[in-house]
Length: 213
Ligand code: ADP
Ligand code: AMP
Image (cartoon, rainbow, N blue to C red; front, side, top):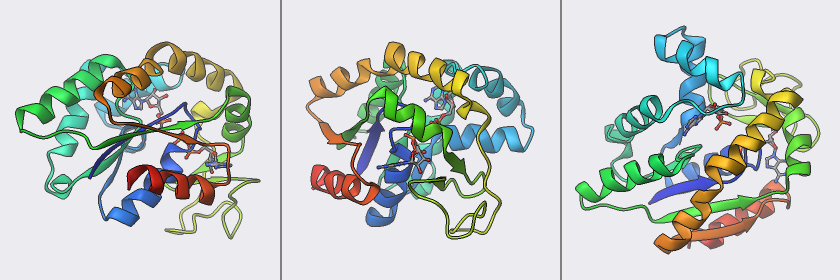
């Protein structure tokens, strides 16, 4: 199963992608997580990505596309993957389609998680992230069992630098301008499924599973 998660930043893509990955036993590939791991390790790629991420802008396609195509050609992606945060631009979607077509392959489903901007701002201000395993929590909606500690791996949770209200506004603007057009792109491809993301995480997951079946 090859799945793309669409939706605004904070819509719940990561939360659901982790569930889908478990259910189908496929890797959860998040370009945001890959960039954050590179920032943490002080790599050149991380330093370049940080410049853009801190402003709420997208990391340039020249950097992002190659990185993602390399990641999905690793052996664990042989039987599929769930992409979270990629594609975010039409050129990224076209490059992915081209790379898959060259191998006689294609995406199965693009799931769009719909959440209004006002709800997004509240979700992102309460988001806490585990930089080690990629799990996300919300201080009110989905708190960890022990405050500040990841249920999955026991690491300390952090508030992401780009979840500050000013940066969230910029990220939403970037989303509407550059990423939202992908909804039509995948509608035209005939693989788009829409899910109401304002429900509880478990109800969103039920709706996602129906969309994938
Ligand atoms: P994305 O990956 O799309 O940026 P996340 O999965 O990180 O979004 O979710 C953003 C925030 O909203 C997190 O704090 C997460 O715990 C919380 N969240 C996710 N899904 C829901 C939901 N259905 N209801 C309430 N809060 C949610
Ligand atoms: P995310 O974790 O998906 O919210 O991504 C965090 C940030 O990483 C984004 O705001 C972008 O700056 C950058 N990023 C993640 N994925 C991409 C992508 N596919 N293209 C460009 N930038 C990205």
